[in-house]
Length: 403
Image 1 (tube, rainbow, N blue to C red):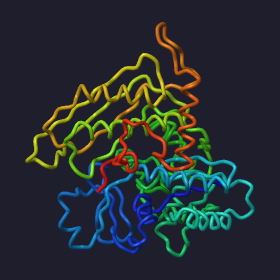
Image 2 (tube, one colour):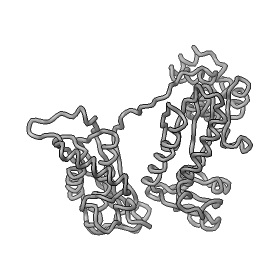
Image 3 (cartoon, helix red, strand yellow):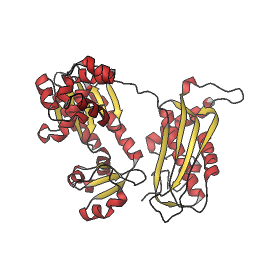
Image 4 (cartoon, rainbow, N blue to C red):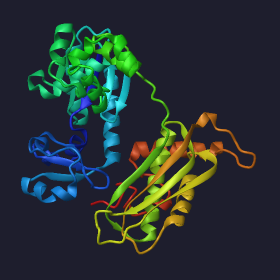
C-alpha cells in the first residue's frame, strides 16, 4: 500500500503557523513578484478567488472581501517542508519526497495503514502546525485519487483508503479525466476523441490501443488505475540541473550597495543548497529587473552569466563571481523590484576534476564551509555569514528588504 501525504493549502498554512490570527480568515499568497495568486486558504477559495488571479486587477475586490494578502516567502516554505518531511520519515522506512508539499510513503507491512496514517496526520499537525491529507491505495496513481477525495470529503477526517476494487471504482466515478495524475488537457481531448470520457473508461480500455496511441506512460497509468503497481518509490531524487535563489523586494532598491548585499545573500543561500546536495557549479547567472507593473517607471531588465575556472560550492568564490556579474549589468537611476542568482552546469562534488591551471577547493575551505553550515543550522540562518551580505540583516535575515 502506498500513501500520498499532501499539505493542505501549503503556503497559506505556513503563513498561519507563524501568524495564528490568520486562522479562519481568507488568505492568499502571491507569486514572488506579487504578480498573481499562487495559494489560497479554503476561506479564500469559498469566495471564488481563482488560482493565478492577477493581484493588480483584484486589489480592490480583495480589500472589500477582507482577504489577507501575503507575499511569498520561499525560504520559510522550504524550511517548513523539511520539517514535515522529517516528521513523515518517522512513520515509514521508505519515503519519496515528491514536491515541496507532497510525499509518497510505502506502508507495506503495516497491519492497519489507515490507523497508522491517522496517527501520522495528527503528529504532523502537532509537531509542525501544518494540516495534511492522506490518500492510501495499492498504487501511486490511486493514492493520488484517494488524496484528492480525502480533501473534498470532510467525513473522511483527512484520510481515505481505496483498498479494494469496489472502493476504487466508486472513487474513479467521482473525478474527471484531467483529475488523474499525468493526464493534462491535451491528452484528455485525444482520449475523448477515442471515446474515453471518464477515468473508469480509461481503466477498462484496451492497454494495447492506449500504448499504440499514447505510449507506455499512459499504459502504465491504465494499469495503475486497475490496482497494478507500475511506479515504485524514488527514494533518491535525481540531481538538480540548476538552483536559483531570488526574491522580490518589499520596497524599491536604488542603491548599488543594497543591491550588492541582496545578490551576495542570494548567492550564499544558493551555495548552501548546493553543499547540502553535494553539488558544485561551474557557471552562475545574475539578474535584476524593475517592476513591470509600474508603467510610469523606467523599465530595465538584464542578466549576466559568469563562468568559473573550476566548479565550486565555496560561498566566498561564488559571491565574488556574482558581484562581478552584477557590476556588469548594474545601471543607476532605476527602481529595482527584484534580483537573483542561478547556479548552472551543476556536478557532483566527488566527480570534480581540476583544470590545467586551476585547482578545486582545498580541504581547508571545504571544512570551513561545512562548519559555517553547521553553525547556521544550529543557531539560525545568517548566524555566521560573509560581510558582503551586510551587517544590518536587511537581507541576511529575511531574504530581502522586508515589508
